[in-house]
Length: 158
Length: 473
Image (cartoon, rainbow over the protein chains, first blue to last red):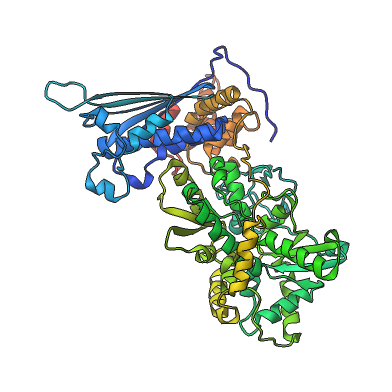
């Protein structure tokens, strides 16, 4: 296919942002946001192995929202050098983050585990994939205006 | 691996530009331009979906020419086991093999025999490499190309074992050069293929520098001749050299049967769209980690469902089951040992890996690709998002990308065009109403006004009330 040269606009910063709403309890389509992010990265031309790491991190974050918070938002910003993902929900929050970061520790309900999810590897997997991993959480308590979990993942294109 | 040849030819005389094909293509390799479909070879994986869906039979798969066999001093035909599913049960395997040889070859070597050997090689490899799974079978070139183009990280998981077709050609050439003293270069091996992707795989192999096979002829083009030869061939009850395991490689589940073990799960998946979903799941880590082997068939039913077959694949599957008694139940101990020894000598190992093919990216430079995508997203938000294909692109997103690249315009979208015409109609009406006081044409104007308003306010059924809001905005 013949391609024309792109006219550069005045703002020459190379950046694109996506936002996905995540609706919980729909396991057959679970992972849609991560898959769309993966396709965008493929079209942009990110190296394949890096795309896989990013997609796995996004997928684990997406599944956490679906399993525990039922509803949330995933935002992604892509530049030639970095991919930043924010996964945010207003769910129950994480009472003990250190415990949650342990491999195999899971608070997923039984019906989730019976479906093959909730193995307790989500947060550790994200930490392993990410160059920067940030987690802020507030549990539902009387007097707490904020509740839920906000995760930020940064992966560099090296 | 560059695609040095391409085996699907689009007959422009038959193509009506109906756009049925563009949405079925798993790699979005087809566009409709100037009223005709165009398949872009760099993205095409030759899965045959366009061939299956086209109501006018416009995509025509092409195999090699039969005259090519004349270049060789000694020729061997390698019939795919799918051949046994094309002819009536009353013709025994030996008769079919003799008929195939009678087409003009010096001898015949069953691909099923090689499939038996590869089955054992796969078992040995999986035993030694359990940790690296799930291992993806490498016999279907369309599947390999799908992985190379769309799921490049999975190239690591393609089994580095040669396909039965390559093994058959290699073994045939070994045996004949040894037995008859003919130079390998003068022996021509021709594969009787059920599918066009093998035609390309023979010219541009993914596991070898150069294929052992010298050409691929389609089963369908030779079917009438074989069918006429069969009644003239004396009945031979001797079983074929392949076992039932080799025979079953041509239908979904055959490879899985060959590698079954108590120690791991082996799964068979057919249909290119099912495979697409499966590979997405594997890449995300959604798939069951206990599965160690995945048999992937691009065609539904396996190779008996390939575009170059004649018999209905579901009927062929039953016919193959009925033929089981005409094949040996298994290899004898000596044969199996020989294959295991050869495996350990590396006889069945691929010479090289299937490499990722980055044809999906918008630009070679990531920064530019991001710019293109950003501009495309803005345009996309103005498009109806129906992916109807009327513009010749499979999705609105791709039209947006093509607009950014300057090879399409927004007016290619019929809904945008209609919107624009409605706008123009309203403008013309406003102009028409500005009649100078001297002209007495009040009644005609009112009629026109009614007609134009009927059209200008009409929203096509596929668009909802939302689109009206968009128009105003």
